[in-house]
Image 1: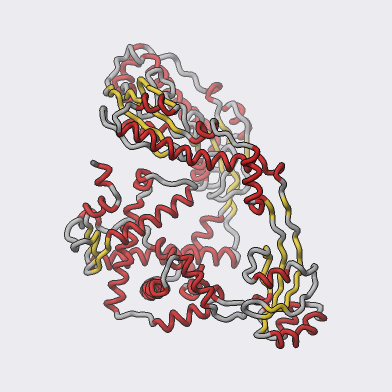
Image 2 (image 1 turned 180 degrees about the vertical axis):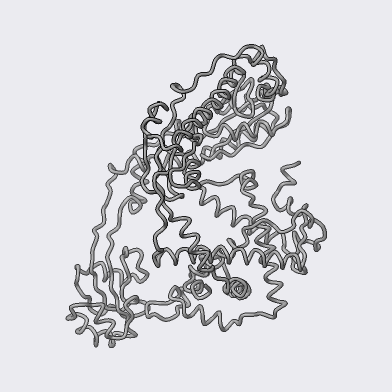
Length: 632
């Protein structure tokens, strides 16, 4: 594992990401460790302190990563829902425990070994194939690291890797376990089934008053009038802003001219290259390379690796050396260049494939450019309007007044419950993020201004609670129709289950399934030979799982996802798993190997945390997250 992670700077970053994943588990013993802590520290593991700055940086990095995956910026509330705080604390205390154990074991990594590793990485090689300080410094700038910090972080990661590899590398899954899982996963079954038509098979008479009363008394909570709130809502959305934004033809043309490359597909070329230490060496090999029927084979004969010769498919911009790039894109397909003296080395080139670029005209991309400009203007307008509304709120103005002054959408909703439903039983707010707005309404307090809610489109919603109507019990007379509907639904499901049980009994006796399907009001359907992980149209997942617990000719029934219908099914055929292929065995070994390694590491780190002791400064954590300010 360590060798793989050492290959290339990108893979060194993968090592850090792997460490992040290793410690993405719940904090061991958090409930009883909010006690002692060092002065100025946010948490301690033994004698190792974790500062607020370290936590904030790690928290921000994690938040940025999840936001990129989600495609939008997460709010603090959403971050808490993801358990981000606990994940970051878990990772930091886990790595601190490993660092403490490494020190106890006297483990260290020398600067020389890190230096040798860096010098051997292809990522930091120049055009001559040797280590380039220019490339290394460029990489450090991308990371935002100084050279000293890079070495310190690398040493820490390498030492932790020594500890974690010692714990996890020896554990290998047993062949018996792999064989059992393969047999379990790859067993196949053919299932015939029919979905019962309730309209043709279920008859439920209307309930009398006594039955309604009995049902109502047993299910009173189901018919309680929920708490509702009267709210004032100021809604600032991106779509509303964009609808009023004008983009002129001149602006579109200027934007297109400034970023023409963005709207075009550049020419690409597959490039073969042999690098020499100087022009004399290149000229000496030129004749042989030009006459060779296979350029790569000739380069290999000269002592080069095939992977060093084939640079892949590149755009002109992707080539580091401008002079070599110019020479490459001046060649015809299958032409071998003369010696080209670049910044770092002299090379001989060959282009084996050319894909022409495509220039999209202004008329081709006019709508795209216009939308991009409108998006940019909308972003600026959203921020400006947000600040104006906040200024009005600071001046004591109501949301209604602020909306009227700045032309922003305003609504007063007389009643809305936690499900977003109004007093008429219909949705009180039609908006993609209605539930987020409702959550803010029920988190607010009458007479207190709350912070704006961040919307996924970059907009904002301000919610003021104007009044609260507590939940109350309703009488049977008030909800009689709803009680009747609920009673009928319950009784229909009971009757449907009873009807299904009779069909299952007939199926178990071996009766023709076509006859059963006819009486059920449906038609016979049959799956192909499927595994238990597969899906089958018309057959719910719980039915498939039940079918795999039955013998051949076994039958049962299962409720469908709509809750109102049931499917009766019978196992027609069972096919044992075939012998696993090498690829299947390798995949299972890797899967279980990763799981076992993760389990071992989690248990080991948990043991280290218990040995050294973990404590948290709860107040410092809240302060680092800005929660104290939110509370005020």
